[in-house]
Image (cartoon, rainbow, N blue to C red):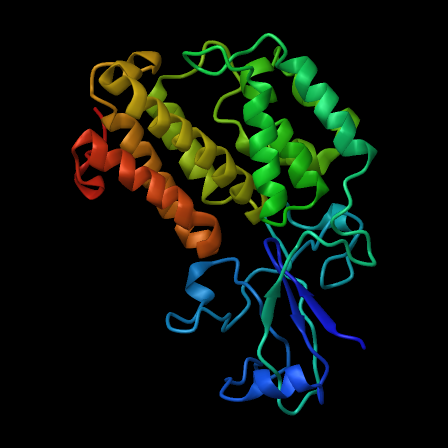
Length: 316
């Protein structure tokens, strides 16, 4: 029995063949999810393209590269695609009565090799461990590589491809181990330009000394609003683990925790402001299944600090 698969960056969707018992059961009460040209839109890059009630894509605004080795919609090679664009792979159907789409696990590999992590990823694990070997998590004795593995694992769980998983492992390499551009050049040499661009998009500073904290964070958020959706996904995975670590440590240490951070004397309010503003970006561009855990963590942290999240002012 065959089925039609539809992909987007975070989940796979499967539609059963017409005439099957599951298809007939799923079609009862369902709404027509096709638009006029019979393209099923699975996810929209921008929030303004989503229907407020159903969440389905009502129009397509951006076109570009599907994945490494693919083509632009116009048939242009990937290397010529605009770097900020991203194309969604959609299924075209001639079914008179499309059935309800159901979510399936992205973990199972497909015939095109999706879900397979190969030697490039293994190389990233080794290279990332080498770069961060002597680095510890802020204020503790936990090897920094643990953070990189958790971020990469989250990206994989959310359906990221191999290049995203590699970039997750290396997301702090340029920022923390930049060595005057040498690391960025080495990432490009080892893993190609797509990974190098992802890592660049995830770095809030690559110069020494770093700019002031607030200046860096605002510049990072401004950049993130225009980065490809693949980069935004990795960023959200990074901030999810960071925020969980902050919350856990705050429960254990209280206000003494903030002495680890650049701004030490404002009771964690700068960090709450930063995560709240990041949440706005993530919630505009990413699915709920990606952002809901981060919102829950940040709201709990705000409650424990004793401030309503929306009342936290931008730091001076």
